[in-house]
Image 1 (cartoon, rainbow over the protein chains, first blue to last red):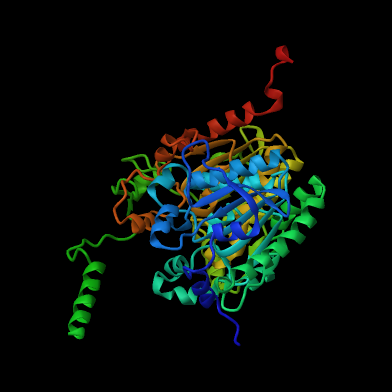
Image 2: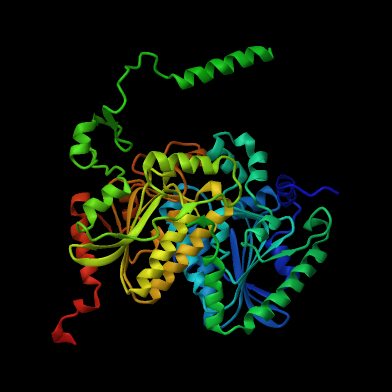
Length: 267
Length: 291
């Protein structure tokens, strides 16, 4: 079989049947207690977060939620979070730091929401703060891109010690549609943009952005949710063992260096 | 029938392109049209008041060099990493040529100038973004220069003053440009942990990935009057909500009233305000009697 292109991967991960955050949480963790609200403004349903156990280890889980039908998508705003979503994530991450729980982020979002209310409440500031605070959070953070990793909206939950991606997941600076629009002023060139932008898991391993690819069943995660979750569990088990063992100093230093070294230039 | 639609469509396109047929031809470079209040003013008047709209007070874009000249004390500026220049991390078609053309046109190597200077005698690390270079989008070079500037500031225990202006992440560098947001924010975090002062000045325009990283993380955030500051582009939001946004949307004043900017400072007072802020944040600022 030929290699699947970025464009084909996009159609796999945008399939409404693809497992969403609640499917993964139910299959991977136990005793999930969802915690609501950012304690500042409201509760953003586009991001769910709470406490759970993973193989008896208490952990904090934060995940973007994609709906499976129009009703659900209305509630979760098509997985596009407002500033209060990122602020809820930060609140839960800080709570995890206090109680020394590792943080696990599951990311599948087209991006942070672009709208009047999001601007009024400081979308830029909310994401910026997460980047700064997650970078220095005194507990391990593992992020997994399970579907679409859309720009700053994904990065707001992806400053981490290890970044894994499901086999068909993509991670990009802008949605392919947006890229086509900005670069060629023609959003119909979405397919071309997707294939040029280097957004697949393999590309991101090569660019030093992602650390691990978690394999999916043939034709995508929705074909066998249990198998997908087993693969994620296997990865998390190893990754948590690796990162929880590190001294705090070592953990924070290597997290900073993970991002510090990304970038290509001539001097 | 299909052809008929095609004809109508193509007619429409022409009409959209030329909305006013009786448009007066004005030689380019004679007038400046303010993007905020739409008033046209003579370029000479506009330049003579320091590139500010004489009608509404909108503070227009400066080059990094112009900004440095009106900010730093004469002869105190020492540039950092002047030779960093872009390569093509994701082999994006045409990127290298575009960068080369801009280098020739602007005389700049990249979209930011960093270094060390004094502002009325107060030593600081300074970064100035220049929107004339690919709308000062943040790629590897911008990210690296900012990160190094913060790292040097930590080493030398110096405050940082950063004039932000940017269209956001640099699309042509793909995911690598997104990662510069995390990288620069991390450097800000270390500088902050060292107890050092960081002041950002938002200038026209500050948007996208730069708003969502280092530009929003200053201990003090200043902005020039009427400049455009926001996360998502105006066109994107108008496309999503399908209605026109009010003119003051995403202005410095809009941000201040929503709690994201400390002070709006006019260009002629900027040097004075920066000097005072730098002085107030020095450890030595504490008087003898309280020690």
